[in-house]
Image 1 (cartoon, helix red, strand yellow):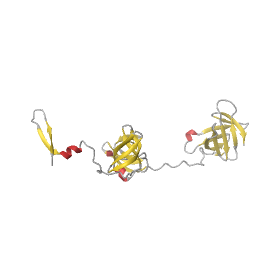
Image 2: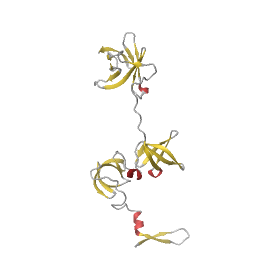
Image 3: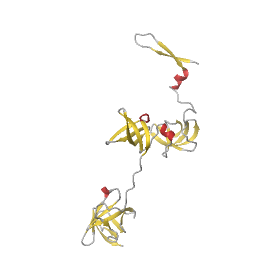
Length: 253
């Protein structure tokens, strides 16, 4: 086997010559050969993401040669290596992806912090660097060498509808019905009340549907799970409604 000499010269000492296999020297300076490593399981035609100087961008595989892929991007066609430069286009990651350091938002992980492992959740990805939310309102950044996969985060529960935003409130159904709108003033506001629901219509005729709850002369338009966006409305003696955007009155059924 051929050897390539390496010389190390230290002050006050003679030159020291070491012989290493030429293949060892080359492996430190050249990319892996085609066919080496794990291929990632992608095939021609698959859509993936590839790592570039501008971050991860969308690409489509044109050729496969071992663990490298010839891909088409908006900037042209190029060879990319798996796993450092090729990853899933956003679908479910495989066990092989995760073994090679690929994670996605909301993955539960173990991260090595200050000499010990802590549980956390990935909240930001940037290439193969991940921002992880930890207990105690703390966060840290880590690379895949300091992360272990612990499972997908539990899906958040859907906000439960049909529950009054405040105790003692009842549905508007049968009490406030019809189309209410303002006359003149700044802007236009139309609310259509139907069977305990209120639709805030915009000028295009589309709008958001909210739940309508009331107690005495007070109304609250409510979106389950977003109480901070509740719209309070006062019922006037003449049947008109005072909203944060002005007074509206019934114009139709």
